[in-house]
Image 1: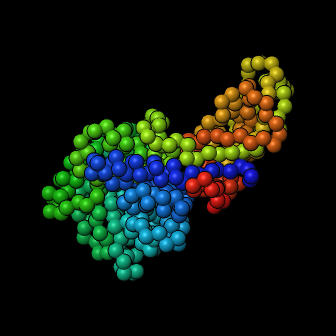
Image 2: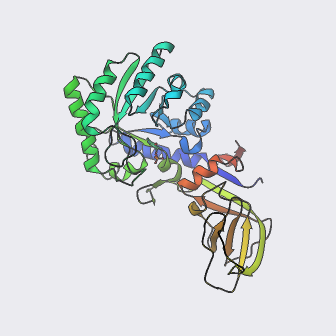
Image 3: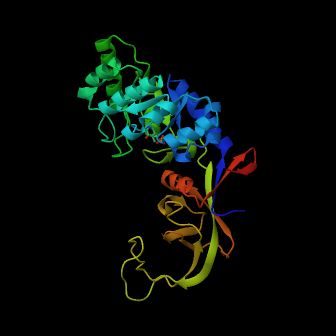
Length: 360
Ligand SMILES: *Cc1c(COP(=O)(O)O)cnc(C)c1O
């Protein structure tokens, strides 16, 4: 079979999505299924929808285009603030977007008027992680300006935590977002439809039995795909953590000294050379590298250790077993490795449905 290849088990993704949708529905929280890590794969988007997600979220308009072209009838939200240079495409392809900038929202309104369409705006609030968001003190002004604009429908507010600084979306942060929703409703005499609390990092809070107050939506990608919560990278009870696997082929396997020799300068990626002499070791090279996956995010099979990686060589030591040229080796991936493998044109993608693998 082609190597390297990423094998994707659609049934496991469906199981994961449907369990999270059900557990959160019990708490009055809907799931926006985020497809950016799988490059907007229409097949996976369909699985998300079949599992009961309320809509699709993606950060890339190109991915939305792919989903629209596959005629998937889903409400779609751009989960990154639109580029000013891209507003017509955003209004054409996305039903709504997450926003933080007045100029962008005004531009969306103009594009909407030209194209005779309405666009939904969710205003993001900065709660301390210091990625996107309007400072809480400025949110009411932003709501007022948004409500005045033609061809814009104000959908609600949201927050995103953990991604940049690792600030946890805990009860206190979510309570602050809920209070902002309440005070916006009082000030403007409106009902806020959507309060989207965050990403997969919010699951620990959401599934802990805490009062979710006004939070009625989470935007989930990683947890559905990898079965893990990103705050502590722990598996979530009942979810599959092996829906994805990456297989690569051995192109060299030899007994070699564990220490390099010669005069030392810099390596290609700034890695330090090994300094402990462990005698000769069984070293293998796989035809996959940093262009195809994040080596730090690959979990090798038992008895195998990743020693180093360059652009297109992954260097391993195998203790437990003999490894021959032509053998294949399969790895589990974390989010970083998954995103890179999905994005590499050199990695073939196979979708497994009901035990049948189809190249996509
Ligand atoms: C990527 C992203 C998500 C989904 O994050 P996961 O950790 O994959 O669940 C949600 N919201 C925003 C704004 C994002 O950028």
